Length: 137
Image (cartoon, rainbow, N blue to C red; front, side, top):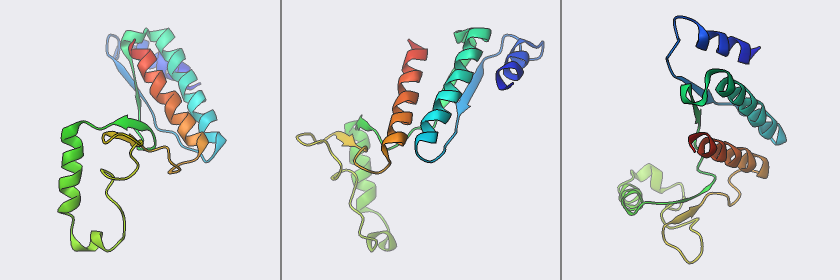
């Protein structure tokens, strides 16, 4: 039903020739999150087939629970902001992300998979990331 509705909109006179952005912002606990992500991907795939990939852009909410490389400038900015945080943020006992959760032996690769979320969440987020890469290829 959702695919039929989006396809109908995309083929209508009002939206003909315009690009669609399908933003998959779904979340459920545990393995249901993986299932929901797969369902959203099925909707996106069907829309891309019906309207052509050039007319459909995919969008997902990024997550800090992945592994990524920090650009030097971004890491330096995080350290600067951490040092300038207000007093009430200092009493909470948190550590600066620029110094914790780094992949051992590196100083610029952040490992967000270290238990911030469960395995189902990480799997779903990785599937979304790879889906975006595939759609752009």
